[in-house]
Image (cartoon, rainbow, N blue to C red; front, side, top):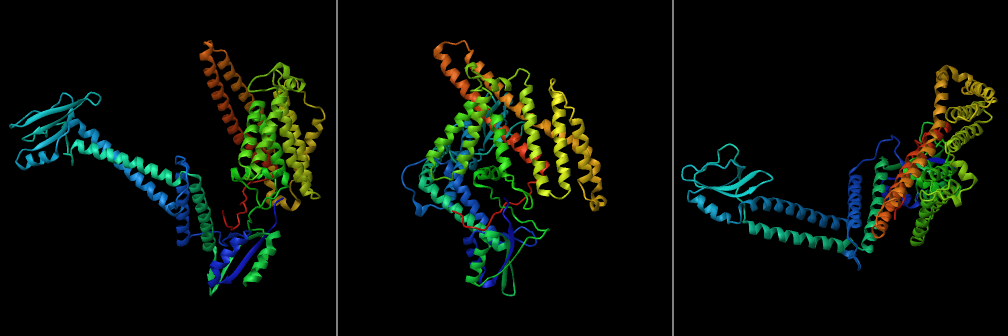
Length: 590
């Protein structure tokens, strides 16, 4: 269900502004908003966001650090300390890169003391380093000496020195400034910088590379998230004439706790139902058995609108079926199930929902793998039976028809659900009409795609009756003047319904592609004519790569296809826009 909300206005004295926000944060039930809808801003908020960004960056550095043993020096550990060390390392890295570039350049001229060249220049004998194209060495004029010191075959360049009168005005001559130190001094400095860089890495790893350090930084991130949220809420508050006020939304069943806190702390509280022009946040609270699917909603960052419906149960059921068909292999399902169990054993204190969710998906995949007789791309005859033979008929017509049936059922659920919500309004009859159109389009799809399918005669009566119901009852009489044009696009909507049904064939197409990829990698590995001692590791490598790639492609197909069929095809028929704002109350993190 979508939990009913109340619009709240909380008033306090300006002097109690910070303490009121802190107490509301401790309650953790008020979703704070601004009446004008503008984004919060302010110096305190900017500082809090910068501090949070620093903590998150420090946490990323800690995750990338080499694991170390021992206890963290908690007294010296802070996000800023980590970033300071990282900045010092970055400075050393830049110094090393600059020294490497200079060393590579001046190694062309050999090792000499630049002070001697400066001394000669003071005596009137100029020393000029140069680079020029191969075969284009400058000529010695006026008693000058030209010395070629090295040649680079790849660059087709010469490096040398001119001692005496300058002759480097010749075309193609590039003057290289004298170095500040000798080549040996540069190499020594480079070695020192590299040593300092390695020591800095070791020090940073020692500081953040152990589990205790990561806990300290994770706590800092949580605390700074709370501080940022508090600053954002403060920026949303109004203030004037000694009174501060805050607006937001609170679930109906949490309103008493806000009122009790208001009575205790001397706040003023006004609560009312949301107006039609307001957009309250959406708090989903499905039955416990369906709650794991909320993780998918969070991952996709989607939420139904407050005045829409909770699709958790239907989404969970059909998403599980689509997941199983798209992955489609008992072996893959078994691997996922084993991984889920092992991770659950390792992380016993973690929330159970993710493990339940992937356990259900894994079991469903195993069941579909058995039904389709698919085991790591192999199809053992000993495990084949009636259902698997029906699903794997050579023409693939049975599995395609099953996809169309699933699509028709899925979309019919959407229409009949809407009809039930609308009843006894006459618009419910239009939704029933759309259900009839869906099955008409199902029969049409099967007739086009499946040669043996004959369009049922009774559908010739169902189709016109369904269209008539939609035409007559989609709008009330008083809506015809303002929305009557919507009826003109009904033919396009009917054609679109046909496309929606056909769209479900993607379950067959993507599942078949996964099977064929597995089969081809199996054939590639097992058909190689190699000596046994060579064949075994090669076969193992090919199978691991091939099936690993197939599992990765399956995960991608789930995100693309299983999500689409629920959030687009089904949701369009149910009238769900997924434009809701998820309920995010001001609360303390960590």
